[in-house]
Length: 310
Ligand code: UDP
Image (tube, rainbow, N blue to C red):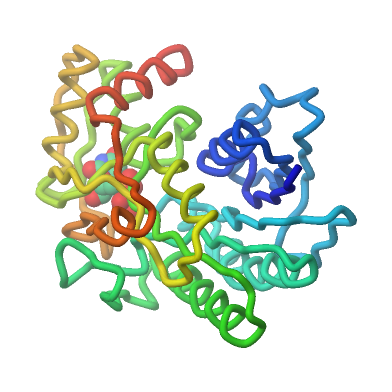
């Protein structure tokens, strides 16, 4: 059996990725310091002999005695509120953590996959975003701690590929949603769903004309798994190209929940990207992948996850 290490393995994406790896016949070690991850996300794997959880901060020296075949580096605060509250940890896990995870992969001769982000494109001047766009990022703004850490992480990953010949992959993840998102992580999906379910005002930031494109988590992890098994070393966008405004998204969630919440407008956060939509031509061509779950269907499943938790 092949063995994968997932850093951030108790987080939203890391836990779903661990489940897919187990399903595909891997042994999985999930590593997480639990500052934004939660053992509730992996509790269903307790007792599975192919699954192991290690509580550890990946920015420290990493050592695993058993052979590792694949390192997937997913540890990081990932919502704008999280990285505003944890700016130093965000910078450290993207820089020091990526270095340690790469070092571990090199020591084991393992393949390495970096969870990067559409935030490397910043407030993009090219739309939709293709992988060859270099981005428009404010390094000293509040989002800079995440964006620049991930940009550094990509540069570090490519350096290990070019200099050490490591088999590396980089996925640029666009907005993703689904069960196991944290109710209070401040992101638009948990915020709107919990507000709609509680009949509270739905807080649209700015005038709601900014756009996002939302991918359901099962589609996302399938694309990432395929990338991990490919020979592609350049970054690959994974996301759902169906774009909508944040106001349309609020209305859609209000309709699906049947809520009577009013929509209210709040100040737009600093450097909030005005548009975001992945160009997934590369993923289609190289991985034969594209998202399958319509946003209405994915939202219904997500709402059912949140309903008993609000
Ligand atoms: N947003 C909003 N209301 C909220 C939370 C977020 O209107 O309660 C907006 C936010 O300003 C952004 C979009 O929704 O334009 C997506 O925000 P999120 O925090 O989910 O992630 P981002 O795509 O900005 O990284």
